[in-house]
Picture 1 (cartoon, rainbow, N blue to C red):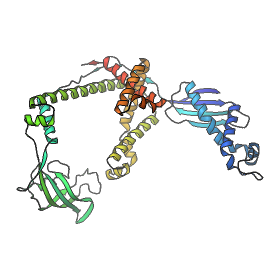
Picture 2 (tube, helix red, strand yellow):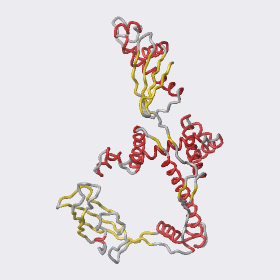
Picture 3 (cartoon, one colour):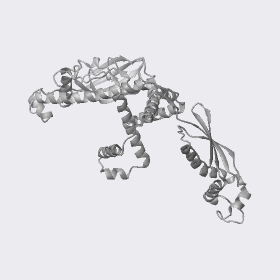
Picture 4 (cartoon, rainbow, N blue to C red):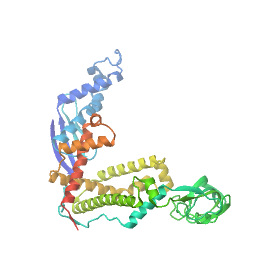
Length: 428
């Protein structure tokens, strides 16, 4: 197989690949074997006519398309590997020569991974993030624990107040006409939470259980539904139940109930320790992000648009999956938001470009600095993943394909490269 490589533009390479006549003949024979039963030749049962007769009856070209599909992908992959080319998109194939007894010549034009011009990446200066935990942080965490361990108590002797949770039936109308999504039954609403239309919750303060209230509101101009944005609405609301959240006392008994400690002071000390560990973890990530962002900013790379589009595809897919976990679909979400797919995708453009550039820069640094994971590090990562999936290491390895191993090693390379940059940075 002969291969010629030419630059065909910015980040575009054209390969001219010549496949030997014998190899193309094998492709023709495979194409015939796959399609033999499709040919209807007078005097022969389907699939029994010889290839030479089929080619005379239908024309020699009848097998070309399938033969090309048999031969070209393998030849292209081999040419790419042998010439150390890194495509980022599917190639555009153009047949230059084809014929029985002839070598197959075709060109493959493909977008390739761009070159990265590194700027300063060792010793970059960034403002250091540090872990700080205050008494106020500990008290706020205590309040969150109290909230989780609170109980709801039904109110019978007073009207609703801010902070109460009311159960309501409501039906809204605009100009006397009901609208979609404006009706609800047994809806639980925390007064003062700001989860409903502005002004709605405030008008329920002072309403007693069993009482009906007419609530007048105006939808915000930036409301997600364009049909309702800026319009005045009237809701007929019935308060069916009022409850308030009763918090436990902060004392030693509370500490015993929610932890393994006997006193509140011991529990608070443990909370502070855990908050500090969390803050240190966050500070570490913030420092990593700052250093990487600075290194990426210092680098220059001309990213092919197709790489950005592919990353947008990934981000849209992730968003779609998150919606599905919430019982929604992307098309319905776009309808509610009054947005088309192009506008939605455009929102991810800058983020996608930054993520692609970051990955390219980190890859370049790992190459320049010869950063690779050791076998021991790879084995340790596989063992950790097996534990996360609650499988034995042996069982987990049985399901790993070569691509999976390569992905694990690639992830380790990125992690080690970020560690390298942080170790060599100046945190001010």
